[in-house]
Amino acid sequence: MNWITEKSVLIRTVEAKLLLMRTFSFTRLLALDVAISLYIWNVWAPDWNYNVDSFWKQTSHVADNLNGTINWLRDNPAGLKLNTPVNETLAWFFSYHIYLWTTFIGFLRYDVFYRYVTNSLVFGLSTFSSMIYDLSQIFFLHFNCFDAYATKLCYLCYYTLTVLWSLVRGKKHNPLRERMDTITLDTRQQFLATSLFVILLFILPTVFVYFVVFRSLRLAVSAIQTVIYFFGTWPFQIFALQKYVVRKYYGKPIAEETSDSPAT
Amino acid sequence: MTSSPTGTWQKILYRKQAFPDNYSGGDAQFLKELRKNVSVVHYDYKSAVYGCMNFLTHLDTLTMYFVLFLNILHSNWSPNILYTVFVSTIALYLFFCKFLAVVANSREHARTIVTLFLFAYAFTPVIRTLTTSISTDTIYSTSIITAILSCLFHDYGVKAPVVSYPTSVSSGLSSAIFLLSRLEEDTPTLLLLVIAFTLHAYGAELRNRMFHVYPVVSSLIFTVLSLFSVYCISSFSVELSVFWALLHVFILFVCPLILILKQTGKCTIHGPWDEAVPIKSMN
Image 1 (cartoon, helix red, strand yellow):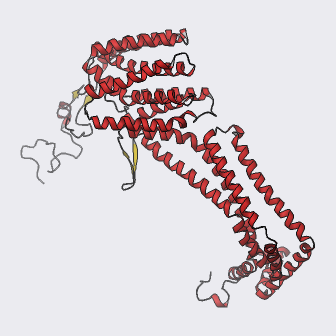
Image 2 (cartoon, one colour; image 1 turned 60 degrees about the vertical axis):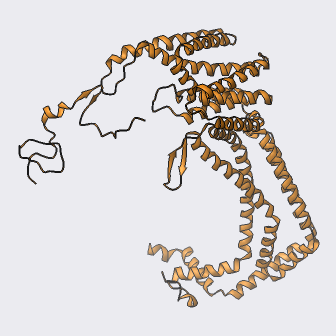
Image 3 (cartoon, rainbow over the protein chains, first blue to last red; image 1 turned 90 degrees about the vertical axis):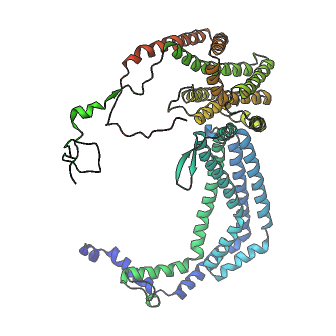
């Protein structure tokens, strides 16, 4: 093993690079940051208007696709046995909310906004990305709302269904003793429990489909945001990585952190 | 610490005796406590037939419900028949409340009726459109399966561990709700829902009390009901109605006979090896 470590050029160069990273100061990282942003400025600035236009085209494309998905769900795709009235109601609700979202981002369509974003490139790629990240938070605010509604609804249905399922069998959860107790309901309670159970049982798939759609939308958005977040904070992350590397390869933390972090 | 003065073994734990721990008094002492057929109940043929009649009455009632539903669905019967059935169900319910219910409390019954109608009325449009996207065959088979499940857990006047009132009522009611989701209009749905609920929630108690209090009248009602159900089924399928009649004969006369013949072979033994059973006070 030792022999391989000594002979392999790859391992030796990687170690040398890690050593180099230690000497790479934060100022240099910032300089690199600004250099990259200036490069991007050079590439993008000549046809900035075109870029903004294509961004808006993409946005309306997203809205169209969302509406398309909801319309697709309206006519029971892939043999899904969705409940028609609930499906219609949810589709109407969510398409209205998408309409609200498009109206909302219409208000963001100011030139000055983009001038700020563009000019922030002067302060480096990380500042630019941070700005983009903050804007995207506002931009995709409604997606979190969609997901929150769908999740709440689905969870409510599911929870009620589990409770009613035990009621239908004549059982009840006893939180004090953490067990299922037998319970005898009177006839009208039994009637209500059973009717609600059957109704919710047939409604749950519909609600669940909407939950899946909006949860995946939110996950997709947060994946993009995570990437932007990385670019927004990358000098600090590299800096933190240096500390980590140093601690891992040289067995001791760098000077200012000795007091509160134990050596491994 | 000392053995008993006489030197004989006693069935006590609080004193040390001159016998090994697993000694139980020898064969004679041990088998003296052997008892046979302590809790075995021997049925006579008549009571067995009445029991089967009780069971078949429930089956016939359920069948009549299905027949009523199908005829209303296909508009074979006029809605007036449905109204008649509905009114007679309510009349039966009031009769049950007045004469047969163990605890007669008119205020409770009034509350039940009001709740039932309000919520049934509220749920009717939901139930009617619940399964529009699901195929009719699936709904029918699910409904039949839940109805059979309801029959399994139903109370036929015998205290058995499998009897469960909530499960029986719930599965019977869900079976009815599955069926009702095929209907087109609100009023028949509401009426049939109320009928189904009354049938499943109070049917068991009403029938058991009837068979207990008026056995002759009940058997007459049973005869009329079974003949009528055979007749009604024959309008859908003659083979099925013949099969249904044969099933009635088999369950009503042959099954009790099998029980009577087989019950002579009942043999249970009880003794000191049984696990302890706490003595419950009878009522």
